[in-house]
Image 1 (cartoon, rainbow, N blue to C red):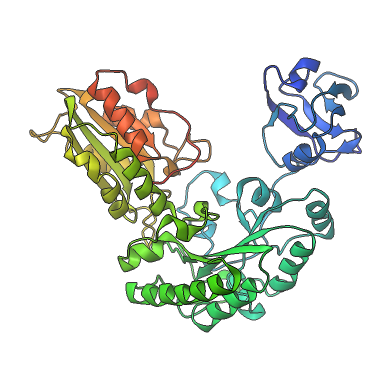
Image 2 (image 1 turned 180 degrees about the vertical axis):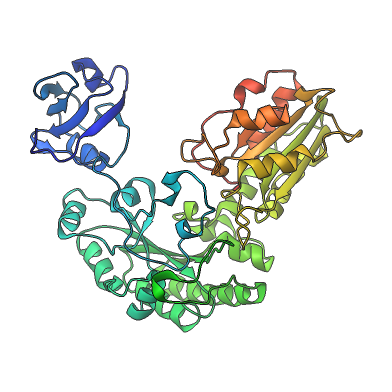
Length: 477
């Protein structure tokens, strides 16, 4: 067994799956498929597609590896889920970006939040952005052999010295040749530029968009997002002091106009907008977000590009089905960060016309991180609970906790919880909110989900048991 450097511990085996039928069980460690060592979930997905497989596992108490011969339809999943998708540990970042959010975290959080990952496997599996500065030749070979496409790459600037400055890494390779190599391997790429005032905007932004657009179509898009800063940022990264600050609304308007100029040009030349500004730019300038067709099927939705538009469009669809009145009064509180409050106010406007429904949005200021952090995804459970505890409860004109807790619902943004939807940055779970507030607390994703829970409460149905449903994405972030 010494030849296998990576052992992937199996967390779950799907009942009735090919792996379950032959006797593979949770706790086994996957070693190889058809004699090829499997290093991570990516390798597992790649090597399990054939109809005939010999799957080798290590089992506690067994003196030697066990081999299971499996026949299944081609492409059918074996049915294994793993404790960690990267069996050999996550690839760490070797950069020192002055705006790295890990370095700007509040102290005392769980250790996993301090891990600076830069792993191409996570980029392929989950759409995380990587820099390509830590790829070894064997990693490039895996990308080619296993067809890891698309990948998501943080560029920040295509001019080599500016990029090295923004990465805090004087040895960072030039990004354009790396992107060209990915294109030669048949890998599609989505890129992003985190803009910092006076650094990689202006002429640098023009150059970056021009260089990336020249690599279309294998470079599919570039997302343009403003820098995010907290009060914990220290200006001492890699002994290079960079004067970072947030954008002003006036500067944000200049960036938007610059991006829109490029969109018009590239749409004529390439048939695509190619460059997309994140929702923050529109919020900072007070502009309405563009129409859905502008986002071209939302290729960078999880980068905060088009979420507001999706929420508003979904709200209009929900509004077509709303009644005039509820059978009994319901008081709904919708918590969110300061940034999406205006969009949520628009999205929930149709619900305000319903009799017997009082729905209020509570924007929460991020007093833990401060800076220009105002999204819902970085809210802390304790500060949210503290604000809501004092909001509306005890007001004689509204249902109170003491008089009728079932008539009051609290909706929390799904994005403030982790990937599994279990805990916040400060380890709060949904039961902690319910214990402090004494009312059903529900993780919300879309307007129709808020409305469905309100209907249940108005009809006297149990809402408490529907408070912890896992949700994959969110429009409230």
